[in-house]
Length: 380
Image 1 (cartoon, rainbow, N blue to C red):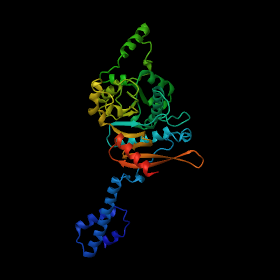
Image 2 (tube, rainbow, N blue to C red; image 1 turned 90 degrees about the vertical axis):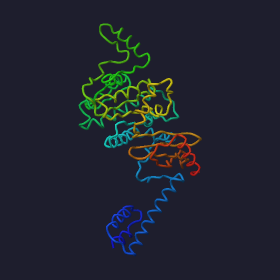
Image 3 (cartoon, helix red, strand yellow; image 1 turned 180 degrees about the horizontal axis):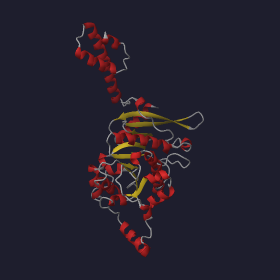
Image 4 (cartoon, helix red, strand yellow; image 1 turned 45 degrees about the horizontal axis):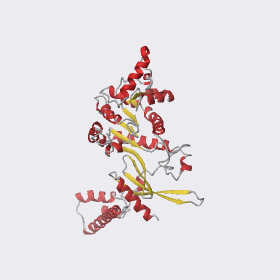
């Protein structure tokens, strides 16, 4: 009777198969009920075969209802929309959710990568001109607005959240621009200061010369502040519960990446989550910097950077006349989206995001382009 009643359940409910499996282990089965069981198992096998067929034909292998959709307004063809919504706020909400999930799962090495210039009145896409200063300013602003989302939680207060800036000048500017009481719960520091707190800092070429000139110019008054105001640095009295590292290495010295490993390698921080924000780790892990010229950086790749979990990732792809995106929000799989651009009724472009596939492993550049080309042909 139990098996017969379960057979009437919705065949899309996989729990019916699991329930029957446990039911039959403990009881004998009559012939009619055995036929019911065989029917349900056949349905289950058909469902598995359909999933395999979707995978081999390039269709999505995960249920799209279980995945976060792409944020709105990210396409370069949606500029009017991009300029009128706060896309970066949406990124922060998603990133915070992903970071929390990763930390709860015991992940310590965390990467976030996204376009920092999209959204607002000055919105810029990958096709627009921008420089490293603009990018760094936006990444700094983004992190300063992310930090309070952690600082409201007791475990991240009283200096336990370290805001680690790429250099002293950026730290000084941030501390002068963001003076609210909630920011006093954080620790303002730099990659150099954080590294020196428990290790030996790898200085970029020429930095010691500039530092020496600054001290000479300062005379009896100390450092002249050519590299920034030392007073902007908070004293590093406590070990951190969270390390937020803002754009290390990307557009700056490669030694930033070497020093990030040193910061986490100290006894105080070996179990502290480190979140690297727009640090261009794809370059580091992908061999962009030849080991023969950057041996110290190369040594960090396998033992450190390849162990980072990408928890929030959004990157545009444009090749062979097709446009698309690679997206991930932890713990969800990697998603490949084709950007289908059509002319709307009002003459403006209309953008439809078509999910091409969802994958447990990150696809390569060539695989993504191949997927997008296939999607464009099927959407003509």
